[in-house]
Length: 100
Image (cartoon, rainbow, N blue to C red):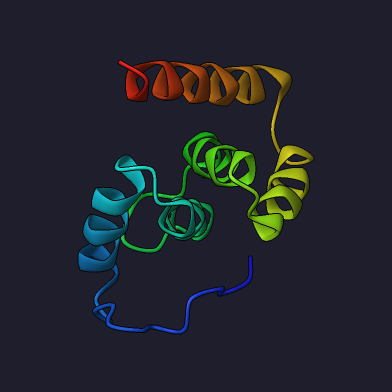
C-alpha cells in the first residue's frame, strides 16, 4: 500500500512513528488514521493486522481520505466476511466513544 506521507517531521523508526500516528489518530486526525492503517497493512512497527488496517482506513475514509477508501477496498478482497464485520464493529465502537 502506497506511502502517502513524506516523512515530514516523523521519526524514521517505525515503532516510534506508530506511537505518534496512534496519538494523532485517536484524536481524530484523518491523515494519521490513514498512516496508521498503512502501518498495520504492511506490518511496519506493529504486527501485520488487516482488521486494524481496515479499522483505521475506514475511519480515515469517513473523513474523506480517498486513498483510504481505495486501500480499504483492496484490503477487503483479502479479508473474510468475519474480519470485515469485526473491523466495522470496531469502527462503530470507536466513533461512539469519540462522541461521548
